Length: 97
Image (cartoon, rainbow, N blue to C red; front, side, top):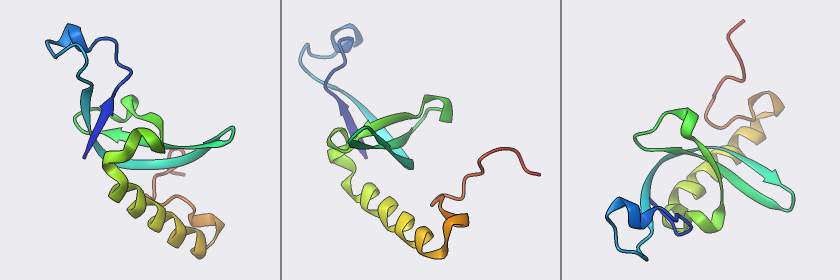
């Protein structure tokens, strides 16, 4: 799944055409959070560690609508199970006890 970085000013430095946006592959959607009035998704980038994850608005993720829909479905199912299981990817929020 591709993501286009149309705001990347370094595209011409990477040997790409001046107006060609740089492409990144989305490995997975990790989380969802509201920033002000806008929902953003925490993206895990293919080939990068979790330290490189970024929060992206949906309009930046047009090429990965299927991944967003899958994530939203997982989230909905987890929320139906109850508040203790709200993380759709079962990611721990801290070290094991």
